[in-house]
Image 1 (tube, rainbow, N blue to C red):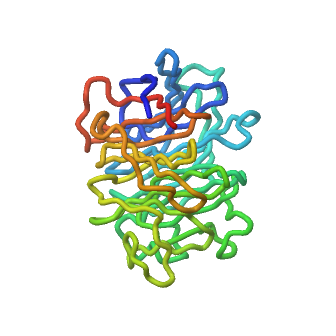
Image 2 (image 1 turned 30 degrees about the horizontal axis):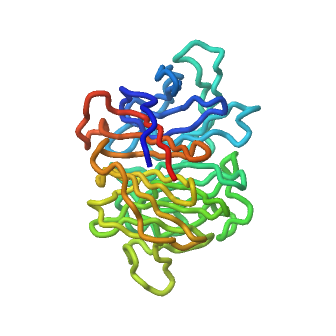
Length: 327
């Protein structure tokens, strides 16, 4: 794995990242509540606008973003964000013809009522190969929510683009796809369309899980590989000091997992739904906290650092987006 170049510097509390069809990037600022377009060739930054209603505090604010599956025709950007009352998902038209700062249309809320807290707000959203919206949520330190299938907290949700429970969800007409999660932070699909998710543990084990419909991932009754009946064990686990994982991406046969406290990028090679061999760490301590990683086609990844989120130690130029070449 090599760092190809720095695509952007001087970002403030970056969180979500999405690649536009023409190659530019959109990045969200958790604390400023803004979306910014990045030209990765020149590093030029253009602010699209501020998302109304964002109430940043603790780990909450403007978090994950995703482009509509029909972005080429509808120009819709989806965003997961914290308000004064909840976490919710809204979609906005991105109109490039308007002046910078005024390019975001009024938000159309498609899903609301996800529990909010100072911490454990989840926040990752991604459209799957099935064209449906997957949402990683947290239990906001109310551990009982993770096992309560009536609550959207501590879950992976599966929605239509309009925010309705997706047809075929495992518990009938509810958005819940899997449960028993503490704080889901990363979502990605491998070449065979299997869903993977990274998750913060408490004090002992962070996790990478293979997600199946209706699966119970154990929290708060199990953390890491507990081997308890009725719960699904993670594929891999890490001590929290080595990972505290956030975004994940799939490229070149492996899941790549960004670490916050661990300050490293983990490679987890896959053999189907199993690990091909032990995880391997890259960039340890070199760029500080790592928040988001997305596949960029072929052997390329985009990686976002996160040292300006009040928990890191910013260096000159932070935060930044890096282009990586992997094998």
